[in-house]
Amino acid sequence: MRKWLKGGVAICLTVVMLTGCSLGFGQDGSDKENEARTLKVMYYDENGFFQRYGMLYSALYPNVEIQVVTTNEIHNTLMEENDNDYDKALAAFIEQEQPDVLMLDPSQLEKMGSEGKLYNIESYVMNSKYNADGLVPGVIDAMKGYGDGNLYAIPMNFYTQALFYNKDLFDEHNVPYPTDQMTWTEVINLAKLFPTDGDPLERIFGLKMARSRELNDIVTTLSSTEGLKVFDENTLQMTIDTPAWASIVEQAQSVLKTDVLFYDDMLRGSSDGVVYFNQDGNYFNNDPFFTGRLAMRVDSNYFVNRIENAKSYSQNSEVIIENWDLVTAPVGAQNPDISYYASYNDLFAINAASTNIQDAWNFISYITGDEYARIQSKFTYGELTLRTQYLELDPERNYAAFYKLKPFDQNIDYTKVPERYQYEYYNVATETFNKVTNGEISIVEALAQLQLRGNELLATEKMTKEEQEKYWEEQNQMHTESSSGSVQMVR
Image 1 (cartoon, rainbow, N blue to C red):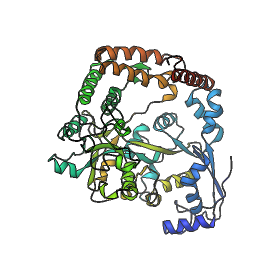
Image 2 (cartoon, rainbow, N blue to C red):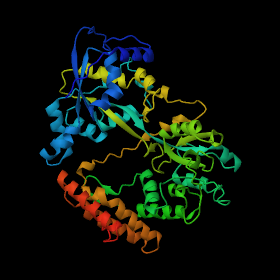
Image 3 (cartoon, rainbow, N blue to C red):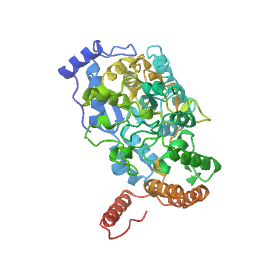
Image 4 (cartoon, helix red, strand yellow):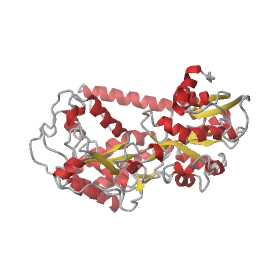
């Protein structure tokens, strides 16, 4: 574990210019300017931590020696030493390294909080100096939900998606604009109001809602939004053979029969023998939303930057969309205030066993506070800050769509799910639903088959690291032989 040299002149000058503040200590009001301390922080890797947080914080607080304990050790050695159980390995890692600041995911936060291993930070967060009111709505309640009413962590940022739409296309075809909290059924019905005829190289599309025209992709999109789960993570039993799932598959079939959807495979030269896009090598001009040929698409906050890049770097920037807006991503009919498309990332908590609580909170409060959010907003990391003040990139657009809905609690501890299920079920589902599309089996038969095959995969043993490596060696060999025509790959 390498210590980081802090206080570089160039970094300090950069920080002063960005923050417009003087360097100093004592968010708690104490005078510790001449006192050297060490703060141990748990993170993925050391270089990533200092690039993202550490250099800036170290320049502001040069007497705080930050030591990063990397979670790579969990996978390198501790998993095997703890029966390939990630929870046990994580607990052993924290016990061994004793970090002051912990970076956790929601399921880990929930477990460790219930075990009394986390420090309750509510009194710090509710202090007026922290400005909890400036956080996106619902974040405190969500964190308390993970902590059974206790506040153990603050996320660094969040990932979310929204429904982007082309206002000019809606105006041209007299279609009403989409609104916040529409269901997929409502969005699809809007898409059906757009024409589907015309020259394939010029025609427009109403909606992009899945990666491909595979029935499984449409089913996954619709079922996820409704909160349906393929299996129960507590019992490791399939839950797909139900009337609710059958209804979703029927809806997906109906969607596929329409001609209003755009799929990514249309960009690769042809689809069903029809050429929709010229392959001229101009990446931006081949995206139908950028060039005004797609009315709606669900995409992440990253997509805003892609639109800006298209305008700046396209060979024909005059055709790139300008009159666009966004609303919340489609919601489930039963849960209109919750978004499957949003999640919190990098939840920072304090080890209850830490003897350095104040410095740990000083660090968390800074990287989740107003000042750091202001700096972060000037750089593109992709994720969104949780400070609403720095999310309004353009007052003319509905950027509140990114944070209006509460994230859907979809935490599944995949370290307890057999690897064979994780590696194979998607292909099994795709092949099974393709048989439905081709008329070979009914929806009822497909769901029964998936229930049976999924349970078989969920009943397999967890693999060691060596067994996983052997598995993939065998799969790669089979794939190579299949490609050469020697054998057919077995799934």
